[in-house]
Image 1 (cartoon, rainbow, N blue to C red):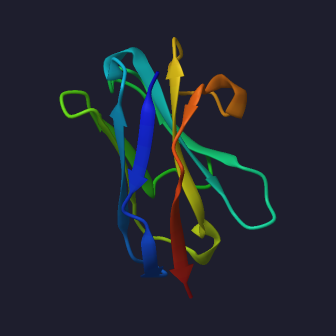
Image 2 (cartoon, one colour):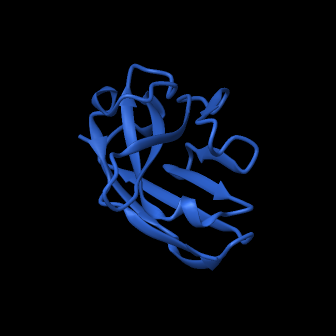
Image 3 (cartoon, helix red, strand yellow):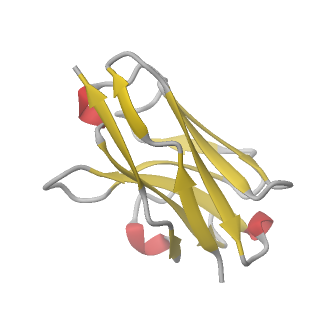
Length: 125
């Protein structure tokens, strides 16, 4: 059983940067691929990107490719989402999620068995 807690959200101006963190506990973190999702008001939760258990592969939605970077530190049980060149349309609650047995490339919510509570990111224009 993995527990996930996100942090690092906040208010930032368009063009700015934020780094989100996700702390994992309660399981063997290195067994899990990790994903980041986001949900804007009135919209469905969508895949942002994911990372293999080893950190050796990352996957991104087209909307964030080239601006966002996912990394992980298995020694610290942490996964990160570095967000650069933020746009107002990036405003959403951001969630990290854990996937046992996968590679983090799946955009399906059902592929991830564990979820954090989310952290709000607001990008002002």
